[in-house]
Image (cartoon, rainbow, N blue to C red; front, side, top):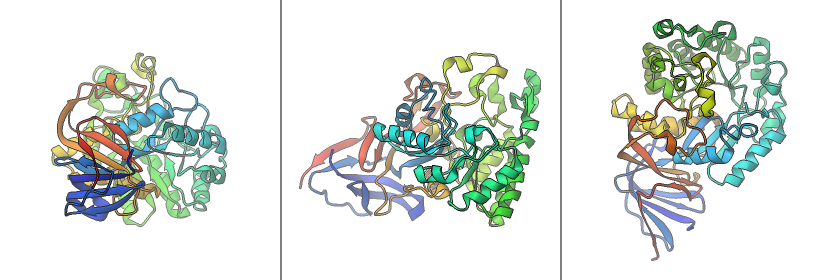
Length: 437
C-alpha cells in the first residue's frame, strides 16, 4: 500500500481548525502533510481517493467501548470490536476495564494493547479500573496502570458508592493528570429497577429507576471535584438534572467533561414498548424531556463527546424476561447514522456533529488525533452524507447483534476509514486510483 494518499475535492470538516469546505488532503507516512483549498498536484506513486460529493473528516474517537476481551470473547474480542469500530468510522476507541479479568493491573492492560496491535485496525486506548476487581473497596495501582498505557480510570458499569474513596481517587489522579470517568448511579435508589421510573414503567408494571439515582451522584462528585481540583468525566449522561449540574460546574471553571450516547439522545423510555430487552440499558432510556435536554446540551457545548457505550451481549442475554435481561446495546456501527438524524432534523450543524465525534473526545481525554492539521495522525473517515440505508444487525462486524435499531432507516454512512494513512475499511463506493507523475 502506498504511503502517500491524496483525498481529492471532498468536503473537509475539521472543527478544531475551522475548516469546512472543499479541499484536497495529502497524507504521507502516517501524517497529514497538507490541506489545500486549491487542487494539489498528484505526488509520484500516490493513491488518489476521489472524494467529490463526500465528506472527508478526522477519524472518529469513541471514549466508551466494551471490547469484552479478556474473558467474554463469545460476545466480542478486541479484533471484532475493532472491525466494528472502523466500519463505524472510529479510528480510536477507549476500552473499558470491566472485562471478566478486570483491567486493574499492567498485565491486563498490556494484553489488551497486544491484541490491538495484532488486530492492526484502529487505535485502542485502555482505561484502567479505579478499584481492584471493581469491588469499590480498595484503589487499584493507578500509577502502574497509567505507566502501562491507560488513558483514564473508571469502574464503569459500577458506581463508586464510597464518597471517601471517590475523593481519594480524584486527589490521587491529579498526580497523573488522567480523567476519572464515572458511572453515576446511586444503588440505593436504583436497586431492583429495570427501566426509567415514569408512566411507561407504571404501564408495564416494572419497577423504575428514578432520575435522581444519576443526578444525586453527579451532584456528589461535582462537590468532591471542586474540593480536590481533580479531573472528572461523566459517562453516558442521561438526565436533564445531570446536564444542568454539569453546565453550571463548567461555568464555575471545574475540570469536568461528559459524554452522551446516541441511544439516549434518539430514544426515550417508550422504546421499551412491550418489554423489548434490546431497549434495556444502564442508565435506562429516560423521558422525552430528558432527551430534549440532552439535545440542547449537545448544541450548547455542555456535552464534550458523543460516545457509544458499545456493549455487546449474546442472544440468550436478551431473550429473557425484561427484569432479567442484561443491560446494554452495541453502538459502533450505528453511531454516525443516529448522530446525522439530529443534523437532518436541524438540531445540530454538520460541523458540531463532527466536533462531538472527533475533536471533542480527543480534547476531553488528551488523545492524539481528532483533527487534520499538518502533522496530525492521518486518521481519516470518508462519509457519503446522502446514501440511504437500513440498519441490519445481521450484517454487523461486531460479534453481537443486540440493538434496538435493527430495521431503522438512516441517511449518511461511512464508506472508508483510514488509520495512520492505511485503509482499514472500504465499502468500494469511492473512486480510487494509483497515479505516477
